[in-house]
Image (cartoon, rainbow, N blue to C red; front, side, top):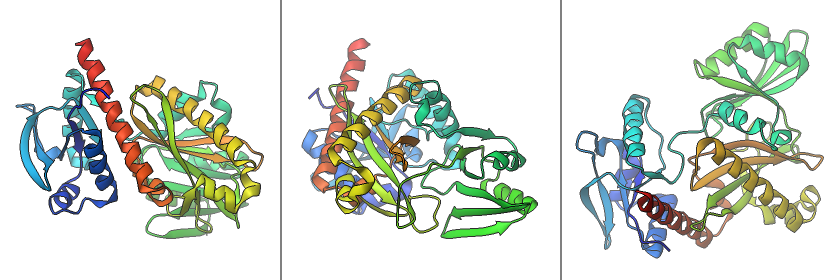
Length: 363
C-alpha cells in the first residue's frame, strides 16, 4: 500500500455530535475500523468547520479511545458522506472549487448525480440498449402526451435519493390516470387529467424531472425486484464489484428502497428460477457493472466508489437504473458480513492513498 494519507470525511452536524458521544453508527464504525486496519488516519468535519479564508478545517480525529480536536490545512483526500443543507450549497460549491485548485482527491463524487446527465452520458455508448427510454420534462403537461404512447411511466427528480422523489403514473382510460408514490408511507390514487397535473406539480415542486419507460422487472409474489451493487476502484486501479444485493419491493410500491434485501446468492437459492445459474448470472452482472462504472468515469471523472442500481427483466435482459455517488450502503449492511464491509472500506482507503501519492508525484 502507498504511504498512508490523512483522509478528510465530511459529515453532517448530528453525525459529528454522535461521533463525539461515542455513537458512530454502523457505517462510520466500519469506516473507523478500516482506518485502523489500513493505518490511514481519518479526520471528521462539517462545513461549519471550514475556514475558506485561512484554508483550514476544524474537526476531530480518533485518538486512543477518545476524540482529539484539531484545525488542519485542507486535506489531500475528501470523502463526503452527508447531504448539504440548501443554505450551505454556495459555501460548499466554493469549498469544492478551492479543493479542485489544490488537486484534492475526491474519493466519491462530491455532488449527487443528475439522472438526466447520467442518461445523456450512457445513451451515446454501447450501453444504450440497457437504458430505459428517458425524456426530460419541462412541463407536467408533457407527461400526459407521453402517456398516450407509453401507458405507464416513472417520473423522477433529476437529483434525489432514497426513492423519495419517484412517482409512478399510468393511463387507466379516457381522462383517467393512476399514481403511486412513496414518501412517509405509500400513497396511491385515481385522478382526472388536471388533478394528475396538480399531483405531479405538488410532488416535485420546481425540481427538474425526467420520465422513464417502465422496465418489466422480475417479480416475487407480484413485487418488483431490483439489484443494488456496490462497486469501487482498487489501489491497483481495477474496478471491483464488492457485492450485489437483491431488493424486493413492498406490495404496490414503485421503489425498492424501503424493502427486503438479501445477498444475490441467497436470493438465487430462494428463487432459483429467476436468475438461472447463479455463477453465470453473477459473472454477467459484474461484467455489466464494470462497463457502466468505466463509462460513467469517462463523463464525470475518476472516483473510488459508486452504488449502482440495475435490474433484470423477465426476458433475461440487464437494465441500468441509476448510479449513486453517496451510497448509504443500506443493502450492503443488510445482506453482507461485517468483515466484507470493513474490507471494502480498507480497499477504498488504500485507493485514496494510491491516488494521493500519484497526484503528489505529478506536482
